[in-house]
Image (cartoon, rainbow, N blue to C red; front, side):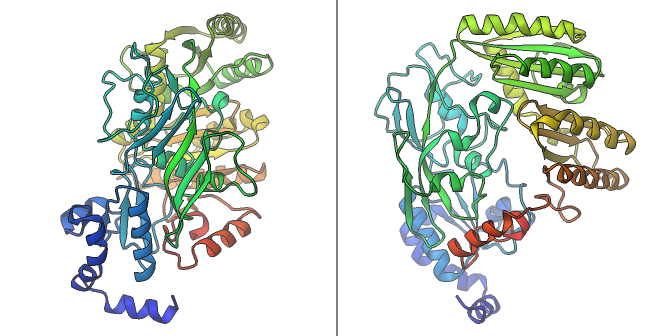
Length: 490
C-alpha cells in the first residue's frame, strides 16, 4: 500500500465507514465475534489507545481471514491473549483492531505415549497442566480445581499418565500458551528445563499477509532449513500470529521439594549458590531473592525469615534418590556458607511456593501503584558483580526494591516499590535504571523495563538489530502487526 493511499484512508476514516468495511469480516466470524461497541473496545485499550474493533477468531482459518482483511484495509493489529503481558513493549504507532485469541482455546491432541501435545494459542497454561494431571490429580501446578476453561477438547489419548509441559512462566495461572511463547516468558526453573523455544517442536501461524504457515511436527527431528517456530518465540506478534503449537512433554518428577535457606547478606547467599554450581548436582532452580521479594510472596504459611538479608530457594525435581542426595548436600553447603535458618517444602507446598514466585509481579502491581519493573541480563559468570551493583545504585538512590536473581541463568528481576504520586522517587528510579543499563551494556548484557517515554524499554540494541529490521520489513512490509511495539519501534 502506498503512502498516498494510507493518507487518503486515514483522512476519510469514520465510525460508519469502518462498520461498513467490517461487514465482510462479520459475515465470516459472526456478529458475536466482531465487537465495535465503545464500552467494550475501551476495555481492550493498549497504552491508552482504544481500538476501533475487538476481534475473536475461533480457529486458525478465521485468524487468516482476519489478517487478510487487515491487509486489504491497511488496519494495524495488536494480538491479545489473557492480557498478562500487554504492558510490555512500546506504545503502538497506530491501532485499529485488537485480535483476541481467548476463543482459540482448544487442546487439539494430547499424546502421552509420545510425550507431545498440540494446543491452540488461547489455551491457558494452567489448563494444559491440569489436563495432564494423573488419575490421582497429581499436577505440576497447585490446582485445587482441576477443571479447565476451554469449551471443547479433542485428544488422542486420555489415559492421563501424569505429564507436564516443561515451561516455567510468570502469571502461570492466567497466561495463555500463545502469550507465553510470543513474549518468551521464563522463570527460575529454566535452569533445568531451558527456554520455551526448547519445548516447541511445531507451530502453525498466520503470516502478516494472511497465509497459514506450518513448521515442524510431532517428532523431534522434523525441520530442515530455517526453523520458523524458533523465530516466532519472543517476537511479540510483530512477525505473525501464533495459532497452534506442538509441545514436548515430560513425565512428572518422581519427587518434588523446595529448600529455603536464609542468609544475612548477599555475599553469603552468593557463596552458597556458587558452591552448588561447582558440584554435579542438578537442581531445577536456584533463586536468590532479597527479603523484600521473599516477604511479598503470596503464600499462606510461608516461614518468617525476618525483614532483612537474602533467601535462597532451591527447587528439587527428580527421582527420589536424587532429590534426597541434593537436599542433604545442599544443606551442608548452606551451613558452611553461614545460613541463618532453613525450611523444606514438599510436593503441594513446593508447587504453591513456585506459583507464588510466578505471581510475585502481579502481587506487587496490586500493592504499589507506581511499581517499576526491570529485567537485567548479563554473562552468568558476572552475576554477583551485577547484583552488588544493583544494591549499590538503589541504596544510593534511597529506593525500596525487590530483587530476584535466577542464579545460573544470567537473569535478574527487580521491582521498584513506588507510589504513582511520588514523582521524585520515580525520577530517582529512572536515573538508577539508566545507570544499570549502562553497566549491563559494558559487560554485553542489557536491561528491559516497563518505563515508557523516559527510558528505552528494550534497552540498547546491538548489531543484530539490522537483521531484525530486515526480517520485519520483509515479512510485514505494510507494518500492520503490532507496529512500533517491538525493539526500536519495529
